[in-house]
Image (cartoon, rainbow, N blue to C red; front, side):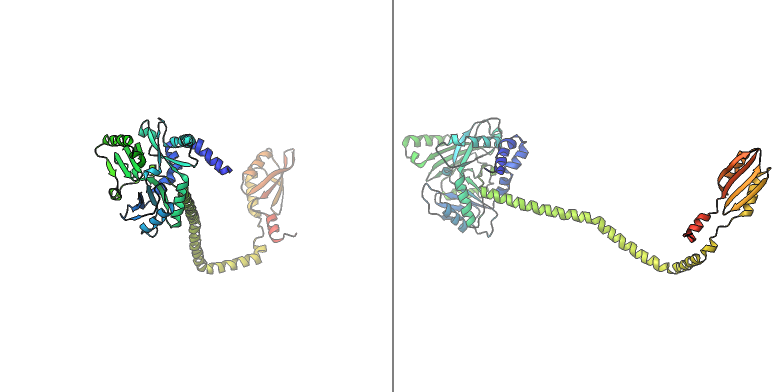
Length: 428
């Protein structure tokens, strides 16, 4: 067993039963429901007649009494189905091909019951070496304390699926013909192999009685069978010939009683995988479209702004020409026109107003730097007044005061010789 198979079996045996019922049902038999929902052709086998319930046509097949003619069934199905590409085929077989066992496990739902029955298969059928598939009609909690489990060999399911596939037919489900309509309280099925009685309560299979044709030849068994039939409800439906199944043309099939071949489930999974890939690709495309919307808007905005810029450039062509003339003039004559102007007269008047009533002893002005000397009883006050005047900056005492004599350096705030030299004479 591979690691994937081991994980799958562990998931089904331990994790799946512990999940909530809705999620468990979706994971366990959701594919089966989708497959049965695709059925558009229903075929029913009665003795050696294969009937198409959709069209009402039938055909005879050559088969032994105790053997299921797999290949002949597929060929006959092909001759009865006139649809070029049928979505799905459901095959109703004779009840004698199935085995019914009574289940009495109250408190367990359908999936837990199926898991328990699969584990008990070897004990229930010790002399049967082939693998059996099992199905239940409904949850045990809906069926009461007991319900009926149906068994069918997996080998025959696989053979039927393969033979139908060889005829270009998709066999999605196999079921006994006595469960063709679960709304009927009682159905009696009589064919050359024997008789079968089934009873339903609210769609749940509650009783299955079967007797072989050889047992009917025994007088005691025949009398017991007849007595059991007499006790049935008066509205029981009896099906003893191919025409008796015509009344079930519009009956709704139930996936609960259907055996879905593993090949059909694999095909469903491939289809789901392909659909998921398609949906993922579509999601990527949608995301790419949404992601490209901002870029498209930016592209539109860029084109609009580029058009506006071209119009503005055309309108401002003359202004830019005038600007170029001004720039050329500044480049040629800027060294003269931008030479820092030292407002000596303004500086003298400002200093006079600040120093009153004191007088200056000396004043030196070099490239915007002013050095002043004088005497005052309050040199610190003079320094503060000079700092507060916007015409001057970098006001400091250049020397310590001595006998009220002060030495102050300051600069004209509007004069920047260093910037002028860096701009026009960077190498000097």
